[in-house]
Length: 196
Ligand SMILES: Cc1cc2nc3c(=O)[nH]c(=O)nc-3n(C[C@H](O)[C@H](O)[C@H](O)COP(=O)(O)O)c2cc1C
Image (cartoon, rainbow, N blue to C red; front, side, top):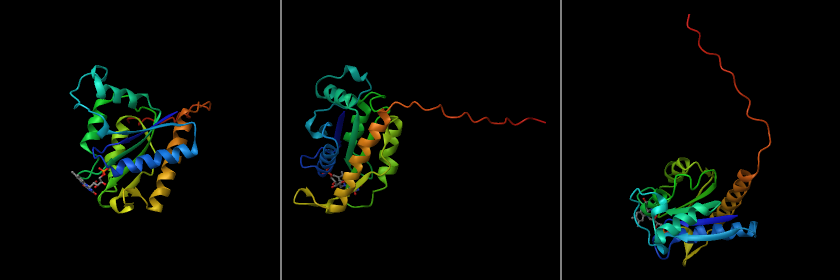
């Protein structure tokens, strides 16, 4: 199973990248068989989406579209810019095919300068995964700059939350892949309003 971490920051020393990478390390501790990889958008020379068929992009853009489409499960993080995820990450969401994330599990991480925008996970991040028909883990992790020290994520509570996020993301993904042999949902008969 391929677990892809994505950091939506273009910063070379990205705090988001550090948090997403931590989550990948925790996931690997739970399940050694996982193939994990961190994608930092700063490592890819992406063009802006111009609306063409995703198969027609070339170079880094095509490579990243294929990498995202090919993965089974995701930990996706972004710095908060202006109260939401970055434009760079939105561009990636615009580039990938509509069904790239369909039916797959996603764990969310947001990094902000302060705690002011922690609800962005609910109101900004989750709706885009709803668009893609992906399943998000209910509790995302919001990290702020005070949780880092000398370029390391040191806050023990945040590390604990990231561990939980990794665990829940991998477990949700496994559940989604399990074949379901149970009965169909019962049909609820509804009375129609009779006109008198
Ligand atoms: C253009 C810009 C906009 C930002 N907007 C917000 C914001 O609205 N709320 C917030 O809490 N932090 C904001 N920040 C701070 C970043 O989210 C914060 O420094 C984050 O840790 C950067 O992550 P990175 O190191 O992964 O790039 C902004 C930073 C930049 C550069």
